[in-house]
Amino acid sequence: MENNKKTVRQTVNSDGLCLIIADIGINHNGDLDIAKKLIYEAANAGFNAVKFQKRTIEEVYTPEELDRYRESPFGTTNREQKNGLELGLKEYQEIDSFCRKNNIDWFASTWDLKSQEFLSKFDLKYNKIASAMLTVTPLLHKVASEKKYTFISTGMSTDKEIDNAVEIFMEYNCPFELMHCTSAYPTEDYEVNLNGIKTLREKYNCNVGYSGHEKAVAISIAAAVLGATSVERHITLDRTMYGSDQAASLEPQGFQALVNGIRKVKVALGDGEIGFILESEKPARKSLATPHWYKKMSSKDS
Image (cartoon, rainbow, N blue to C red):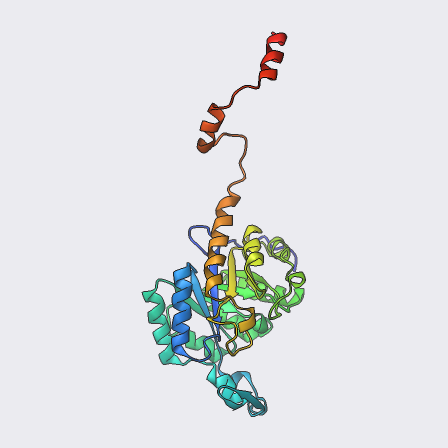
C-alpha cells in the first residue's frame, strides 16, 4: 500500500495531549476487586483510559486445546485457566459504573465477534484491535463498521497485513490510530525500534501511538517525544502476581512516573519557535553588564 493521503488525521484527545492508556488486560485475574483497585490507581495517577481484554473462550479455542492439562490457580485444565481470567456481564457493569465514578474512560480489545457484540451493551468511546487479531478480517470489518475511534496494534505483523487492516478501516470511514508495538513480554530495548512510529506515520498519514511491553518508563516517554498520539502500558498491582502479562507491567509507583514524564516532555517540546526573549528571561537580560573589554573596543571603534 502506497502512502495514502486520504487518511484523515484525527485527534483522539481534544486538548492535543498524548492519550495515556492503562492496559489492565487480564491482569485482574478474574477478580473484580483487583480490577477496581487497578482502575482507581490508574485514574489517580492521571491515565486517560483503562483497557481490558474480552474473549469468548469457546469461540477462540478448540475443545481439544481447552481440555489440555494446565495447572493454574483456577484448576488443572486450559479451560479452567482461560475461564478463570474472564469477567462477565455483571462484573463489566460494575466496571462501567466504577469508571464513570472515577472519571476515566474504559474500553476493551476483543478476540471474537461475540465479545465485540458484548461490548455494544456499553457506551464506549473507543475500540481496540490487538496485535494477535490484526489478521482476523471478519473482526476487523465488525469493529470498523461501528465507526468508533479504534486503536490498532501492529506487533508481529507484516506490511501487507497492516495495509489490509488500514484499507478496511478506510473503507468504512472509521477513525483509527495505528500503534507501534513489539509483541514480546517483556520487550528488550533493542527490540523496541521507536523509529517505527515515524515510519508508520509517514506511510499511512495517520495518528500513530505506542503500545509498550518493556520494563520501566523511559522508552514510553521517548515515544511521546517522537510524537506518539497515545501511549499504552500494561499495569498491575504486583509484578509477581500470576499471569503472562505481569512481568511486562508497571506497578503503582510507575503509573505516576509514566504520566508525569509524558506530560512534562510534551510541554517541554514547545512549538519550536525561537529568536525572541521570553518574559522570564527579561530580568536576566536587563541585568546584563556589558563586559569591560567590549566597552573598550566599542570606544576605539567610535
